[in-house]
Image (cartoon, rainbow, N blue to C red; front, side, top):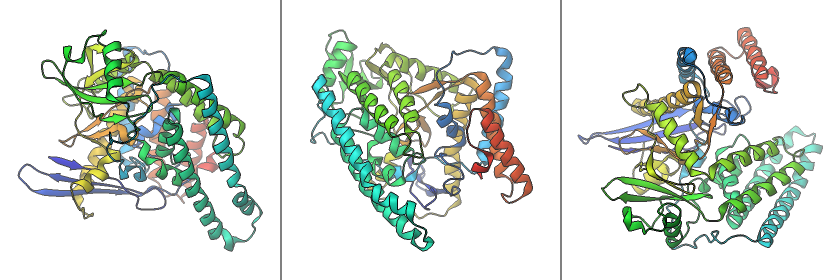
Length: 497
């Protein structure tokens, strides 16, 4: 059964479509589509994933906490998870991904120029990279001064549409410059590009669209470099053929820290092998230091405090260099989703015992395609989708339900969750089931905060069930704002309206 699920924009307020086609075994064809229009930007900022996933943005701001709560509270945790998941099912902020991200990125072309970042960076290299970043970003900020002054001095309401168009053109030009700078510098800047692409609540949508191609892959390393890393780091100098029956030279995906190859172990088991780029840690930590310093100097300019965002990224980045920790986190989440269930809501790969080191991770191979590439996959298959059937909505609901249940278990039961569920890490398998990959970023939260998040989800669902203009809704909104502030939020209730 073939499943294709592209997403694309249907309104200026981050509306979403999920379009799927299933070719059943008997040959019948169903076309599925889910349409969901979000509220206007500003009313529900930042909700770019299912409700249970929405919490990831807030949860990711909290540092790892020691695991552990007694069995005495297990029953309460399950009740919380069920209540919050049920609320999430009906909540108006149910969204999966910003659909602009899902135009897909082209397959990796090994004939293109390969990345040479495996060469150890010198102090001069790092200085020149920092200088290039500072000068280009400063010039970009200065280019905004004329339109900013026009907006500040304008008192003519009739000129609003003209100013909006000028801002749009400026964002379009700036986005192209940022994309070019990221592709030139690579390193951690690629992860910044991925953040821009997946967080249109933090960045202008023009920038998110322009950086969408960075979600899935960057230029791959030459295979001889990959072979040497695997043989030295994992096999103790033995050749690949001692452990692997086959090892694809073409990577499945390539990112700023590592790239993944498909392989087959002796004995026939198919696996995915994640290989860290040599000498990448020093370069990336230098890059994040540069970006963090620049964001601190300019933090009063922007409506979003990017310094706090960069500080969180720096903390997360330090965890991503240790693949042993990633393997442990991946296995823990797989165990949590599989516990007492006939079939887990989403599939999670498991690490291969004895074939994991700090820089090489061997895990189950997950067939399928990421959400970010499904639109392109649809085009390659020549499938034209006519939206409108009920079956489309059924499948879209199934997709959202699976992700909501999975993150409900991770957040509310286990208190340990996948903290980077962008479209490139959500897979649609050939049988239509959902899978999560790449557990380099995980977070752990304590029981108190889990309970607060569950209560918040229920309150959001209650508000969305009311007429926004009613007195009851206004009281509920005030209560919601007060509760968010008690959790550590800074928004006033009036700002949530």
